[in-house]
Image 1 (cartoon, one colour):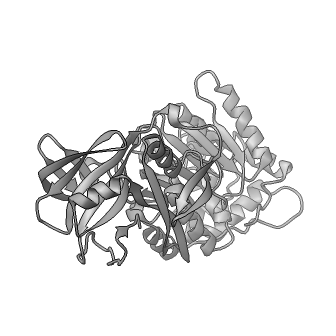
Image 2 (cartoon, rainbow, N blue to C red):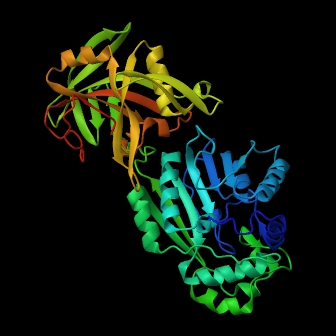
Image 3 (cartoon, one colour):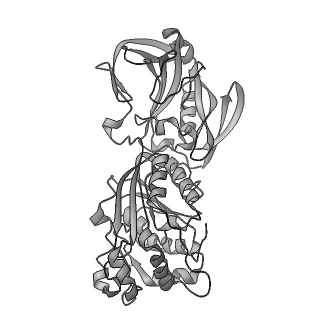
Length: 461
């Protein structure tokens, strides 16, 4: 990835002298409607975790913080971040502190332990060096986005890409050096990659501006991203093409398994009515078997015949509170891995860390294994809970000759169908986490797309 001129103070100052950007409304394309008109952000921003990739001088984060969001921003430019911090400080009496970090967008270890309800990026992704880097970034951001969260990003439009570079080079380049040379992505590259990763594409918006060189400052102020008074950077020769084609394309996508929607939850209980809904299918409880283990009471529920799932037992249920979230980045877990003692360093606020600590606190002994699954470009591994003692012996006796497996549900869903390890999923206040033992009939498919396994304990993946 090239930093272009964003690491040069003179260049950044030239950019900020040219463009005036609102701190009250989220902007997308230049000289084009913003969030008030487009209404792309359809979630409650109160206490929502927001990330801006390439946040520049922080205007979008300030606008979102004014609506109660918990805001985070990264940028490769130290100078732009210094300006962002100064701008945010001016609003210190009305907004919570915004977390800024200087970092390359290709590295996703920023703000460890935080998962995001909303991720934004305005024009920044076109500074990547290849479509492969774009694919990798999409995949890594998927892991950092909460189920049900949205990712909104924009590029300069394919039909005006070269003209857009020309405009930027005229309006922003300072001194000697290479011109802007940003990436151009086809619709096919973007749409196919988003779908492969697991995002649901909800809206694609094309933005254009007619006769931009003729716009007055007052007319430009109708848009949140406009030029300073007397400093319109657009040339008349740009107008003809701008009148024919859009200059910006915006994508709004949502992470698969949007557990924010009640009807989409994969696991729901109503014990009073003895009903369970699992993977979209209503199931009836025919009998509940109470038993004790580690000084606690548990219930194993036998289900009426319908598919391969014949029984369930909730081993752990916890709703995340602020007191449980840690301020340190990592923690060290002493675990049983494939029958041998092991030490594992994970994000302190990962689901893995919280679940392990709560199980141990409850007097239960989890053991783990490593599962291999297909990642975006290559095979990856993730940690899974293989067995929980002494629950295993009790449940095995209640469901003899059945296959026993353990699944983890977050807010009623198995994240990304189990293709993300628990150590890669961050806890957020209010998340309801359930660790479930599931008994299934031998030799039958137990979940759509699940391959038959020979081992007695099914894993998360």
